[in-house]
Image (cartoon, rainbow, N blue to C red; front, side, top):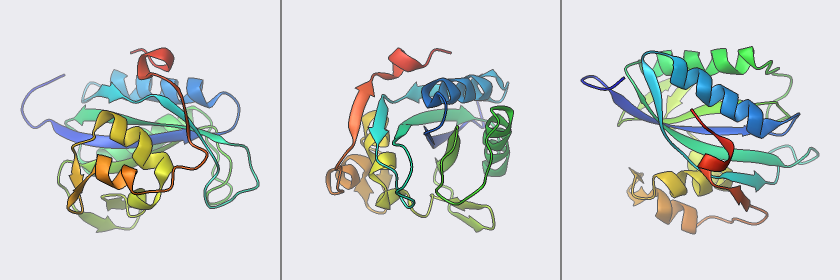
Length: 171
């Protein structure tokens, strides 16, 4: 897939139950298998401390760049279908999960609707999002600064790189 009407989006992936690296890789393969969507780049895996709800295991997190002919809502639906196929259960906000996929940005779209806000409203507050994203999109500008600048200014305590994108994901 390539050509006209292709949009670029960035995703954040994470999980802390079962084998999250395998679940995230499977989710990316599902997205890549869709005829309207392809995975362009994938960050390394990062072990990160829990955020929001602290009494749970550490997470593995990554970021991915996606090229798609989907709409923002269409891409979100693809991500939610991948989560569902991997048996994601939504019990509590910020709680443990097998896999989680968030749409962070979709080209330069600004959207504030129930169920989808773009850019993601809390992405600049979360090192577990910014550190992997800075690896694959350091020069991407949001809120007047590059992702690398945002990542450099945030507390990275407890975040550990685990391995390169090609170490854990293959199309």
